[in-house]
Image (cartoon, helix red, strand yellow):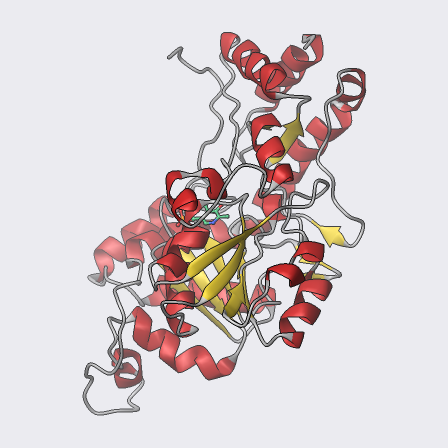
Length: 379
Ligand SMILES: *Cc1c(COP(=O)(O)O)cnc(C)c1O
């Protein structure tokens, strides 16, 4: 491995994190659900205009909570794009569900809503759209179909915090939505996540599941005089130390998003000519979507050109990376019946996509060097 002068990602660092973490260390309250956790939930609830957001230890865990909350059981089917992270599917498989993989749209790389209906069976319980790169799925159509068949929508919004579809925040369409604060995401506390609850009927049970299946939250609100085991659950609360780091970043969300937007637009504008001359495709954002600049990708003509592209950047010390491998062709996916040709766009795009460094603290001169390196390339 060469030393990369320019990494693919560095978690955002604002500066206020240290002070907030030191507050926590001095406060004597390091476990979950203290002041910083409350402040993070409040910021997210206010910003998204939703009633309830619970911080979790990861987006993976928020997805697991979603599967428990929807009472997903063995034999149930859950529809998921094949082009996503393993956690989107694992959370439901852990409850015994069978994943049904759907292909993506070649333009947005999101679950193809036109293929949704024909994958629905009497066993279908949920569909989990992923807003790839934070560009919204067609939530109108997905909402319509899921209502028609009485299927729940869970948005895996790991990429999409502060993105919009038809002027409405991503994460507010599904009955539940999940966020990630992993270090690769726009806002990070290393490992962390959140569950957005858009049906108040689920609020109380969500708190219970998150608190090891106990009604501890009600106890702390004085609603019951002792707390006890009332349901299944696990430990999905992040520590206050992590919430303090996250709070610093959420507080600075406008600054972080503005800088990410600048970097993204710089790539988009400066690579236009080069991409056109080299049969490379730029990312596409439909006019009714506002994206949160989570990632910048290019679609190369084929696997060979992508391999040469990644190598050429690597030779200059720039770390660019590909993304999801088709889940239906993974070892686990094949156990559920996945085979070549099931999701042709997913199969093709996963061979051709490359992501460029995009992070808050990326120095402008480094981006300039990345751009100059790419523009000189002949594929
Ligand atoms: C990052 C990511 C996850 C998992 O997030 P964690 O917080 O690391 O558990 C899930 N789904 C998608 C689409 C992601 O990008």
